[in-house]
Image 1 (cartoon, rainbow, N blue to C red):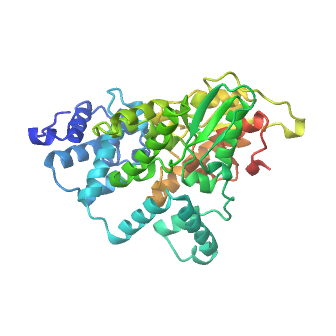
Image 2: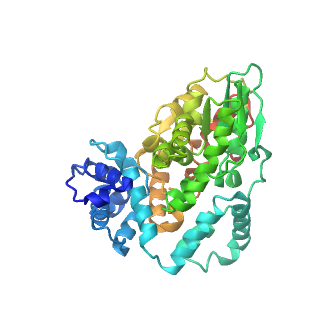
Image 3: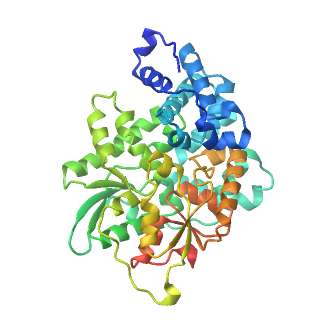
Amino acid sequence: MQTNFSLAQLADPNIEEAENILRKCVHCGFCTATCPTYVLLGDELDSPRGRIYLIKGMLEKGEAATAEVTKHLDRCLSCLSCMTTCPSGVNYMHLVDHARNHVEHTYKRPLFERILRNLLSYLIPRPFWFRGALNIASLTKPLVKNFVSGRIKALVDLAPKELPAASVVDQPQTFKAVGEKKGRVALLSGCAQTVLAPSINEATIRLLTRHGIEVVVAKGVGCCGSLVHHMGKETMAEPQMKAAIQGWMAEVEGAGLDAIITNASGCGTTIKDYGFMLRNDPEWAERAAKISGLAKDITEYLAELEPLTLVDKEEEHQPAKIVAYHAPCSIQHGQKITKQPKELLTGAGFVVRDVPEGHLCCGSAGTYNIMQPELAEKLRDRKVKNIETLTPDIIATGNIGCQCQISSGTDIPVVHNVELLDWATGGPKPEVLE
C-alpha cells in the first residue's frame, strides 16, 4: 500500500511503525473472509482492509478522529483473525492499537459513552471495586433488567447471580513445589478473573505445584494493562504494565523465574507484547523485553513439562468424556498456540472436538460485549450454535471472558482448561460440573 506521510510525521516512532505496517498491505482481501464483523455486516469498512484504509487516511492527514472512523474502529473486536489469514504479515494488532490511542486523544465521545468507558476502565482492573460493583448489579438485577436496554442491559445481564468468595491464593505469596522442585514460575493472578472465577488460579497452583513447580504470586503485580490498552487508554495502561514488570523483575533478580504464567489468554497476549509497547522508553525497554520473553500461557508451559501424572478415579468420578474446545482468539490468533491445549486435554483422557468456525470470535473481547452488545450477542449465538452441534458434555476454553460470554448463551457447562487438567491429575471436580 502506498503511503504519503511527511518527514515530520515519520519522526514520530509510532507513525513510522504504522507506515511500515501499512506498506505491507497488498489489498488482497483474504482478511475479509475471517473477520467476524464483516461476516455479520458485509460492510467493507467493518473489515480489516476497510479499517486499514480509514486508519491510513486519519493518520496521514494528522487530523482528529471522526465519528465515522471511531464507529468502525469500535466495532473491531481485536480478535486478530485477520493476522492469521494475512499472507503479507500485516501486524494489524499494532496498527489498530495505535489508531485507538489516536481516537482516545483526538475524538470527544458522547457524554454517556465517556462515562461508561471511564467507569469500566476504572472498576474492572481493581478487584475490590469490581466485586462491589457486581454485587450491586446482582442485587438490583431483578428490579431493573426489564427497564434498561442497550449497553446498560448488557452490563446488568453479565452480572452473575452470586459471586464466589475471594481466594487467599491471589495474595502475594509463594507456593512450594510438592516433592522434587523442578522449576519456579510467577503466576499473574489477574483482576476480573480473581472476582469472577478464583477457582482458575487455585487449580493452576495445585496443578503446577503437584508437578514439582514452585509458584509465586509477586508483590505489586495487579492488572496487566490489557483491558485499558485495548480501549486506547495508554496513559492508564502504562503504569499498570510498569508495576507488573517491576514486580516480576524483583523475582527474576531474586530467586529467579523460569516463566511468567498466564491463564487468561487476553492478558498473555498483552504481556508478550510489553517489549514492543515500551520499546521507545529507554528506562523500561530492556526490562519489558525480558518479561515478554518469559511470558507463557499455562498450556504452553505445561506442554514443555513431562507428561501430566493422571490419577485413577472410581468410574462415577471419571472426567466427562466429550469436550468441545473453544480456542480464544487471543490464544489461536494472538499467541499462535493451537495444539497444546487440545493435546493436554486429550492426554488427560478427554475426547476433544474442534468447534466449527472455530476461527470466529465468541463476542467477548474485553469490554466488547458491553460496548457493542448487539454484535456480541449475534457472535455468541453463532458460536453456541456451532458448539451445540458437537453435543459435548463440557465446553473447555482458556480465557475468562470467553467463559462468561459463552455460558450466558448455553446450559452446557463452560470450564477452564486448567480446571479440567487439575481434576484429571488429582484435583477436585470443577464446581460447575457437580
